[in-house]
Amino acid sequence: MNRPPTGVAQRVLDGPTAFSPAWLAEDGKAVAPVAAPSGLDRALLERLRTGGRVVGVNEVLKCVDGAAPVRLPPAGQPTLERGPVLLVLPDLSGAVLATGLGYALVAGTSRFLGGALPGGVNDARARFARHARRLAGTHPGLPAVAGRFPPRAHAWKSPAEVAPGSAVAGQLALMASFARGELSGAEFARSWYAAGRRADERDERVRGMVGWALSEVFFLLEDYPIDPALREPGDVADEELVAGVRTAVESLSLEGGTP
Image (cartoon, rainbow, N blue to C red; front, side, top):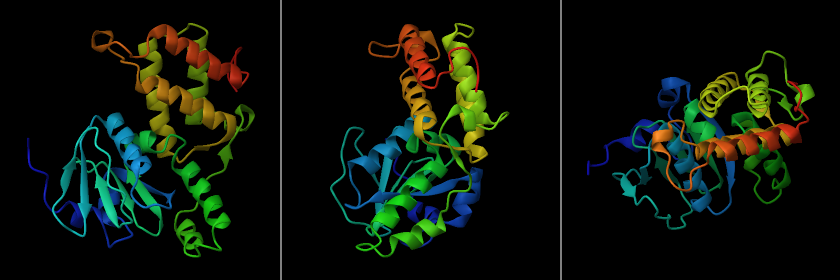
């Protein structure tokens, strides 16, 4: 096994509670805060692993106090730590920083964040802002953190609110078309992922039923091999994919067309 790369924390971080601007500038990375009252825990590690699966990276490095990174076992869970603790993918496409101050920062490329933050960066920022307001009495520093990472767009919660021509509108149209049997599973998966990347790049934000529907499709596709030759027992089959997407479409009343 290759040794972990050295200097990871120095390259990724700019102090104990911030990512390096230079690292963020590479590939147009974005950042969102998430609630982390216990510090480093299983939920934070799972965010990183889910984002890693999307970009095709299965290993996780852990860095504490500037020491050399160590590899976490594929199925291993972290020891609960207050922080600051950095979890990072070996290719540096995504990272999670548990600050130990009641929150963590999730950062990475648009593809990585599509897995780590299924609702999108702006949705995560909006959720954290609400969390910060609720806990301002006991955690007075959280509102300032939310202020550093404000949502940058209105969140669409129903198909009627989604802007025509947006990438999210494209995702919904693909779902409706696939539910009507007009696309193969592979065509749908490739096109839907591409539209999702455009939505992330444009900072398009969703919530409510639209957010739920897109998240449901994302998790279905995560277990759907586009190449049938790679299919294994337990993977999502074409019939399951169609049924799941149809359920999401019906939940949004899109059966006959697009928003």
